[in-house]
Length: 126
Image (cartoon, rainbow, N blue to C red):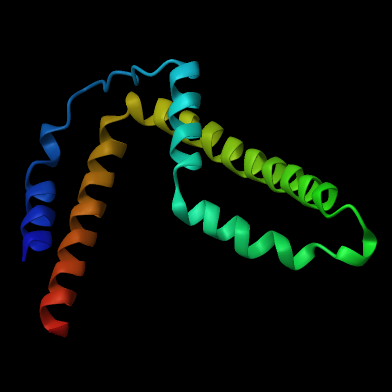
């Protein structure tokens, strides 16, 4: 029921969205350090890496450590490419939304509707 309440509140207070949203206060260095620490301490990422990489290592080819290193570099490059693309797109979309009240109101209504729908679905499925 809390999701329904939150959804209705988001829809009711959509006109209360401020005119210009201030930009985030994180510097690039601080954001990088936070992201790096989050990924290094993320047990899901460690589990994923430990479960995935050994499947592609063939001890008969020799130098297992080198195979792991190459696969690790490939994995990091792919992560950098995907995460970098998400970061750039999120920054551009955020800058666009910062000055568009109508778009932010529509997002509030859509999110409120989604919350309300999910809350109703959870209540009905019990």
